[in-house]
Length: 623
Image 1 (tube, helix red, strand yellow):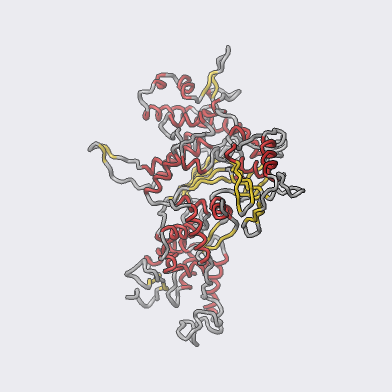
Image 2 (cartoon, rainbow, N blue to C red):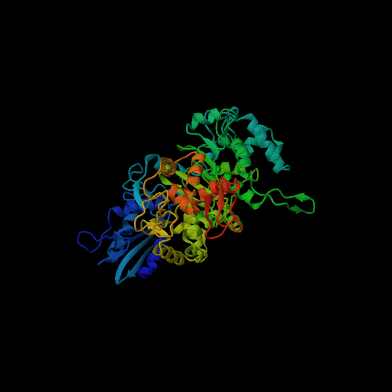
């Protein structure tokens, strides 16, 4: 293996290098190895390189081992010792000897542990010896996080009956509506011949105890799906189901535009939540006019099906005995947040073929209604549909610290016009001259605020090494700036020159030449300022240093900035400390339509040098 090969591997994996020299310098396993091993196995896997030192700049200094045979033998012996580590998740092929610069090192490929082995812990204590990987570092797992991993190791736990409950703890209206939904989707199904008790037992929402009493009790899945909210809350104090539609403009002072939450006006179980939320999520999705067999209109598209699959998956995979609840957010797409970490890796989610539901009985209740798949095809379906629409790729990530999983489905173009225009304003030919991979990376950094190597791989079919080289090129050219090392490296928009509006005009100011509109005795920015100018400057300064700002104040600041000359969207954004996308979409476009601004190139809206000026009261738009 060459250093270049290793660097390429490191870009795609969580990575840790350990010197492992030992006191005699011949090689020994460091204690910190087991913390990293536990953390990677409990989170999403990673690479551990033994026999190398990681320098401060992220580069590696290979040292190797004098006695690699002894080190490898010690590794396998300790992996099989339950007093040292609770589970061995490594196979023989996961431990590889690699030669780098004449040194022999050990490369450990640590997979995510199977749910039955988690938490992987040290020294016989799951409460103190379990670790998780957070921000490329090892952290002792919070006791609640470790406890939830132990609970996840028990399969089919949602199919058990709930002691001391009866069928009266299920909501009668929810049971009736579920049966109606079931009958509409599967009218010939034999379960429909049973009375309510028999029907609930047949679908797994209830369970008949064995023995003499033959008492029928709700299962955990039945309680989550159809239960009375008051009963659910007695057993799960943190029960919460929330949907919010958020304003597109982050500066909008409203906390939400629409909301569904347990407010006492409906019975907050999963079935009733699903019925209400799916309508909200699918509202606004475009439905093309399509007819099959010459007479039946098709009202659902693959997008509708994918959004529905995403919602059902979030409900099925949630940990309802954790300390947070289900949250669904809608703003330029959909974000679903459910309690509980992934039981498989994000890469396996997108590859598909692996179905590992946290609540299989609950999944069965949805599948009886023909909602949700059971073959692990949800991830690939979402990726395919989004790719066909040329939308930004879906994202899935874990918040290990809060024990939550996030799924984000952006309903916007891979290269949104507003973001492309902002980058053209900022960089001109330096952006337009990029290849497709470069444009995708730069637009993603603009839209999402930052990106990393794994996110770039989600957006492009390019080889991992090509992505690495492109990111490095963009950093060298100043279009991106990087922070962190290797897998932990994040990339954000490159440093930009400060907009000289309201700035001092020394020798370096671009407005300090003879042709500058701000140069001369008549310039309002030259010399002493009038009270009017000071008041205008205060408006801009107030927006720049504020977080949420009333939209009308932002509009006033834009009019001030554009009062005397044409200003690009990027320049406005930098002066107001806002994203160019927000300024373009939520302010400039509207103000242009209202006649408050004039465009420098009115006949060419997407002109690379497009800029805007406040319309004077005594004249119309420029010809």
